[in-house]
Image (cartoon, rainbow, N blue to C red):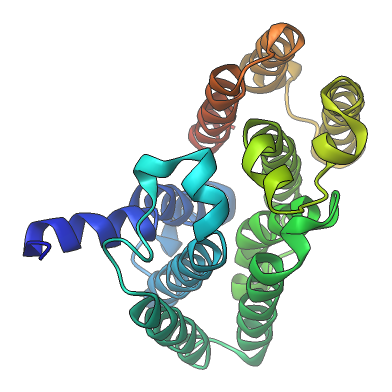
Length: 281
């Protein structure tokens, strides 16, 4: 029988505690550095961050619930649901986290409630169906990641273009990472009938698509900045262009599951650099 420490560790792994911390940090940085320092001790920002992380945690739980068989091939040592956490408990945990996240939205505004409900529903559809389809699942997760930043504008009723730039940044970086993860998980996904881009197109064409997507990403951010915000280009060189160039150079040589796993982790580092750059811009 698992010990208490093992169960707690399993729950932290199941809900991706580190990812949730980065998510909350991103919202606080966006509010404090892009909206104003008065937001730091605003109870509404705290409620929003807790609400968002609860819904994200619920998404991770339901994703692992539906992916037990696939994960037993792709990453057998990290399977939690069905091994350390009972499947029924996982479903109840998902429902409780989702309900709590939506309920907290009522303390803020109907717009936040609507966004929370949309996020919960989309995460469920993603885990159950969308992630097994080419590109659509990647797009769904990326949309929600960008929305987690853009919602700061909704909370404070501000049309901050800097917030929009970072939301676009989060969207594209997550999209790139999700496609790379599909390349990493190709074996298990293919075994259970998923139709991700690497399975439908093959690794070579998927890489070519990522090159195009990365160029589109960089051009989109620079265009928004040039047209509306006008930050100095040095910020984009330091926090965007150099890391992306390194990512693409490694992607061109990647051909093993380990290579793609490293690239997926490096995408997280670029996301973290983007968050930290808010303190400078």
